[in-house]
Amino acid sequence: MLSKEAYMVIKSRNQNGVYVKDIAAEIGVDPRTVRRALQRGGAPKRVPEPRPSKLDAYKSKVDELLAQNVWNTMVILREIQKLGYTGGQTRLRMYVHLKRMLRPSPATVRFETEPGKQLQSDWGEGEAVVAGQRVKVHFIVNELGYSRRFHFWCTDREDAEHTYEGLIRSFEYFGGVAQDVLVDNQKSAVLQASNDGHPKFNERFVDLAGFYGFQPQACRPHRPRTKGKDERMVRYIKENFFARYRVFESWAHLNQLAEQWLREEADQRLQNTVKEIVAERFQREKPHLQPLPAVRYDTAYLEYRKVAWDGYIDVQGNRYSVPAAMAGKRVLVRIGLEGLLRIYHGESLVASHTLKNRVEGWSTLPEHRSEMWQSTLQVEQRPLAAYEEVL
Image 1 (cartoon, rainbow, N blue to C red):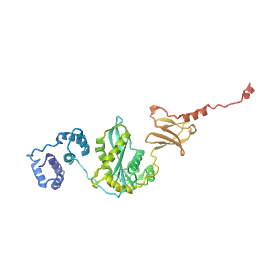
Image 2: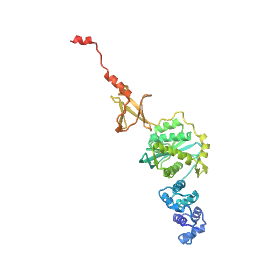
Image 3: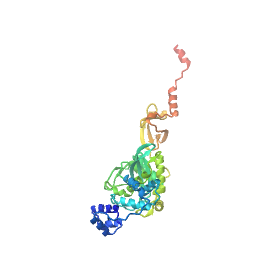
Image 4: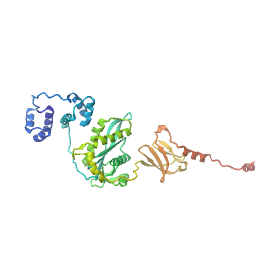
């Protein structure tokens, strides 16, 4: 018997010009049933009373989650289980499926790549509570084209240094590097997009590519479907991980939970296109990945500073000491994403500090000041005979 939800689908598809036979195939009924429903202008009036379902008492909660754009049935199942639902997932999937068919779903163009050939990279964003504060969460998603295994890393910004750090963390998670890395046209990787296949890449991104041995590639402008696999994973993370986890003790806690979720759920999912468990398919791709280099690429910010006469440099609104001998000289500053400040003169590391807020005051290492004090306190010593001659 045709339900009201099924008739809503029939009516919606018919208004959009979909053929009757295609509508019938979509909802699993005979085309004559669809025609009769359209002629009648509604579902059959005499509908036998449905059998009671364990899901009935929780449909309002399910509808509430769907209204919040939570469509992943595993997430919904866990939420209603907390409220006492003891049924299975099959009936829940059927209920959500009828609702889902009313959502617009533009077709995407998929293409397959050889094992180890390509990794797609993209950024997404959402909101969460981190360390007691509601903040915008930026996350970089890197997906292997063949196995569909992906990794994501969350942070508070998506500049060049965080893009490189996210890629490296994904390489380390996979245990190897793909031959090609396909990125969008963000400035952290691409300085000038191109329709002829010859974009101008960021110099440091090219340096990263040479260090890890991959070939940088960029999407052509106005062709977002080129990275369809990865963009689908951005949505998957929003609707699954961030629908399940909303509050985190810290950024480290967020990323710890992310990798746990990747191992326990994302890697174990049945991928709909290739009809295979992602973790199992990855085992065939892993031997084709290039090995990681022996030394990790340094993703720290690079800046140059001139040391002031008092032996300090200015960095992000605060002052940090260096050896007194560096006064007046030009030094290289590396600012690590973890908050470590390293100062180099030539190839030599001359000082290290932990970054501080402006309100915390200057950062001074005692050994730097002792050198300054010794040079300041030196007094010329003369024999007493010199003073006797004056008298």
